[in-house]
Image 1: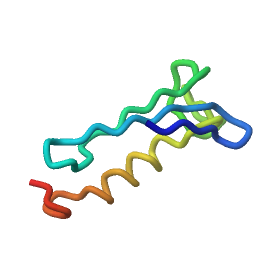
Image 2: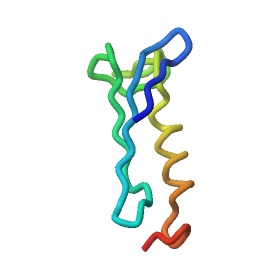
Image 3: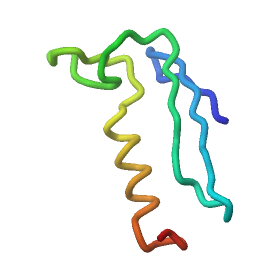
Length: 74
């Protein structure tokens, strides 16, 4: 479990869940104090919260790091 805070933004807790081989398969993010909006979006968008963390950036980071067929993934 990792706790952090976006600069001038929301605090968060990120929990990684691993398979039987110890490979990360899932990340669960809890954004503390955020409303019901897309985390990290532009203030000009509908239903977005620019105080982050940037959900799209974090999803891409996870998916690129754990691509199918790499690092023993099946």
